[in-house]
Amino acid sequence: MSVFAGKHILLGVTGSIAAYKAADLASKLTQQAALVDVILTSAGESFVTPLTFQSVTGRRAYTEKDLWGSEAHVLHVGLGRSADMLVIAPCTADTIAKLANGIADNLLTVTALAAQCPLLLAPAMDGGMFDHPATQANLAKLKERGALIVGPAEGHLASGLSGKGRMVEPTEIIGHIRLLFGRSGKLAGKKIVVTAGGTQEPLDPVRVLTNHSSGKQGYALAEAALASGADVALVSAPTALDAPVGARLVCVQSAEQMLNAVLTELADADVLVMAAAAADFRPKNAAKDKMKKRDGIPQIELEAAPDILKTVAGRRSKMKRLKVVAGFAAESRDLLENASEKLKSKHLDLIAANDISATDAGFAVDTNRVTLLFADGTNEALPLMSKSEVAERIIEHISKLLE
Ligand code: PMT
Image 1 (spheres, rainbow, N blue to C red):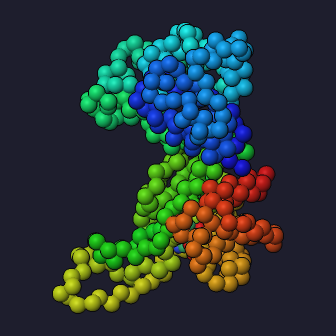
Image 2 (image 1 turned 180 degrees about the vertical axis):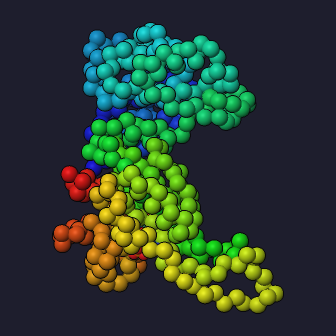
Image 3 (image 1 turned 90 degrees about the vertical axis):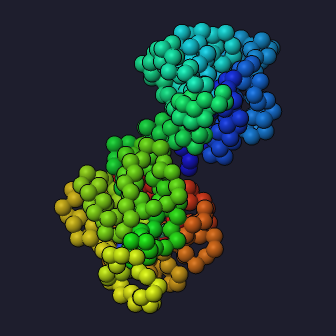
């Protein structure tokens, strides 16, 4: 189950042009089954309406008129005390100053004083304001009290200036919320190595032999491990994906480089999850120079690429901390037989068998349909679900195997 599910997130939205991004943030959090209550300051309302937020969260959005409404004297206390996290995104210099000095002159700042939960701020302001000593002093005070400041990013600002002041993207804020919620998760204190993406085996300086892996399943596993509090090393072949916030990204290209990176990371790891589509074969002799058409059609001789899981199996007795090794089986026929054979031959604790011939599972799509096979002979067939949900289920099983 998503670490966001059922969590009460109080989202403060203040008077910055970045307020339009807060609607996307609210929507994404709601899609992760969080309960998002929005508080719009008057200045925030100048940029975006309560209706926008009510439409994406399905819950009321509060404004200044609610502060003096019928339930006024309890609203802010109720909101503040029921929240699992107070996120203020965008957070203006003015609101930062109020929070730092305990000023409570609107519903948001009154609620912030009543809140008992972690505070995450995503600053947004125009050129020069962020670096102003007053803003920096206020931020330092808030950090000292445990607030998490996310951003701002460098970039184009509303004034036409460029510089530090743009609110970070909603996905980055969500990544930090995931880490905060995951801190006390079942995998806290554990190091998980996850591999992802399709390795690239050079043919010549320009061409590679690769596959269709997008990295989505591996990155989802890294996110799920982070949401359970793990320290995550993500060994990734080239993908178009941003590394999940909090994961330590180790970029590789070939199966050989992936093997070396995995062996290095396993020196102090508890778990390995091989979701990457590492090459089984590679060109025996990669050409030093770009192969030219005028030289005719090249005959390419292939050789075996290093089998990472087999190599790990051969060294596992020396890897004292390594407790769980999970793999994937990408099959187009005889799914369970082939997966079961790999489970045994690669000495895995768990293998996720996925039928990559299906159009809604396997490479590049957002969903997957896997059957989990365990070393004790049991198995669990999961219905079609998102790769994030598959990842959460696999991480839950890995947590149990670690107990
Ligand atoms: O990345 P996506 O687009 O989201 O697609 C996800 C996926 C289909 C790539 C993923 O779900 C998946 O099936 N990954 C494993 C792909 C693969 O290489 O499967 P395989 O049956 O060929 O290999 C079996 C296991 O051995 C895998 O865990 C693999 O990582 C590992 N292996 C493979 C080759 C190699 N040289 N060394 C290995 O350790």
